[in-house]
Length: 449
Picture 1 (cartoon, rainbow, N blue to C red):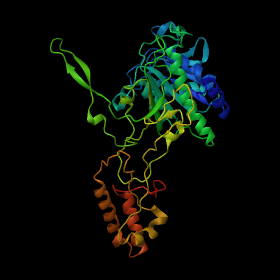
Picture 2: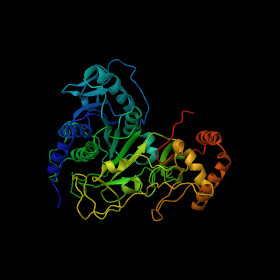
Picture 3: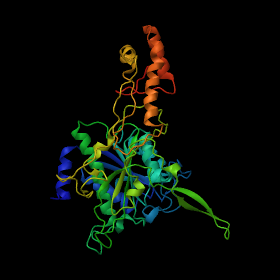
């Protein structure tokens, strides 16, 4: 049985109180997509603001550019605000909608440091949504180029949970051109993308509320969402795509510089290069978001962090389980039944496959039993990664045999340090300070050294 979207929305509203939400984008404050998302989030009972660029700022990435002009030197997009108006200000029709003559990253900063303290009674926003963008933003390369994601990771880096949303439909239209019904008798694509985006955000909000409340995402975490082409202008072929758990790498492209001998000019060409598709962090068994969008009407949901450091190896903690906060709306690609993103329900016969987990494995070796008791209060058990044999995850830092050998070697290294408690403590400090320091099974140990 498929539950109606209206029933689901009412149930989700009852779970959580309204939050304070900022919406931005790189296409401009007057586009249909951002205004429909604004309406959809308000319909959930949230207190919503828009602060977005006065004109299209696509492709700016995380670049921060503030206007050098106090007043607009030209009309805003779609002529909503005229030349000569201040370079920042509210929409003439809605005091919760603001424009600024700057890049997407700058708009988020202006929202947090100017609009919020001066024109609201808020101290911060609970969530930032960026988009839905006109055009997909898939893979690590576009992650760095897209203004939509520039606004997203700017918010994350300012300590606010954020979700970047992009759609395959690429023709920008003003909010006053949104169709109540299309020629096919369906909702406008902008309305459908907004409803899908709002459902995803509300799924996260609802799950966190059920778990007792708090931050919507762990500090430093964000989400990248890509929605396929919504076909409601012509047909219902793709109007309710399911959300699929994905990762940024996998099938992703990077640019090549293509030189035209005739014109003497360059253009770009896509290259599916292993350098942009190496899976280092996260769940390498998940499909890449680029590959998901090549399928028939599926949306991709990838979780990212702003920690670009490489792993040091031997980590025994998989980190916060953000993906579970998106369940059941966001499903795994190999689920037996996929449910559209407009319907927040999981049929009884849906089977999901567990993701690979990092299982603690204590150090083995002849003297491990002597070492661990003296160090347990400081660092806990030394752990190595242990994936299920059928998970499809390959070890990238040596073979499994190598890791077992490393584990034995670690125990042998400690043999000379157990003659006295002082020597054991000294070895603990060396382990913590070394490039090969590991995490305890209960989390990273901070000794203040």
